[in-house]
Amino acid sequence: MAHECAVAGVGPRVLQQLVSTLLSIRVFLYSPALQEWLNFSVPSFPGSEWINPVFAVVVFVYGGGPFLRVAVPELKDRVPGMTLTSMAITVAFVSCLASVVFPTTSGFFWELVTLIDIVLLGHRIEMRSVRRAASALDDLAKLIPDTAERITESGDTEEVPASGLSEDDLVLVRPGASVPADGVVEGGHDGSHRNVPFDGSACSEDLPAGS
Image 1 (cartoon, rainbow, N blue to C red):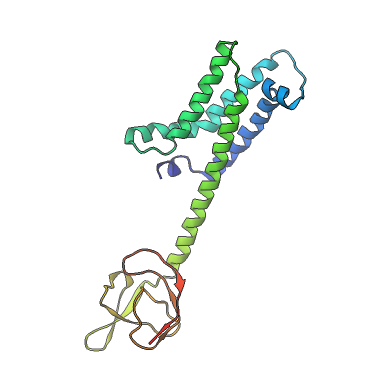
Image 2 (image 1 turned 45 degrees about the vertical axis):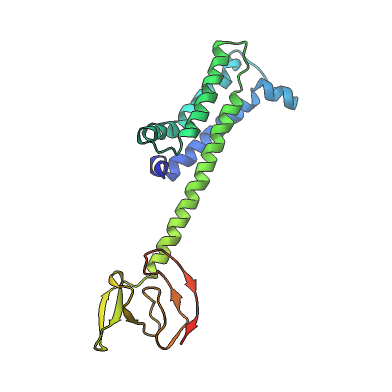
């Protein structure tokens, strides 16, 4: 996916989530709409009416900035990834700014910051899942032996790279050794752990077989 490398980074991502959430709480508290709906009030002071616009701009630039930067190359390459997300937060941001320029319209700054917070959280969860999947694949790859004992036409064995095996090769698997590829048991009994098939796709299954 195009946006994974562009906005990756566990430390900065956690910091962005924390800062955006803390600023969003202030936006929630000073949102007239939320105050009316939830029937609460907070102390006001000179300039408190600018808390929502200023904090929302900071959340948009700091929290949503990485997604906006990713959208530019995605549009150039015509590979949409975070482009729709960037469009959503940009439209919400422009709508909120319009409420500042034209006070007759209602500005839902709390919706803007909520959207950005949810996107940041979703991306963190996604990247954590990707890292865990990559780690599982790495662990699976460690089970694959680098070499295999291939039985020649004369009945002798030769050590060859596991990646060099072909579909018709006959492989000798000694007791305790790992099976270098999927295949059919021609002799003996197989109750071992199979790793990777000949077509190169990853699989992992315990399948006892005998002959």
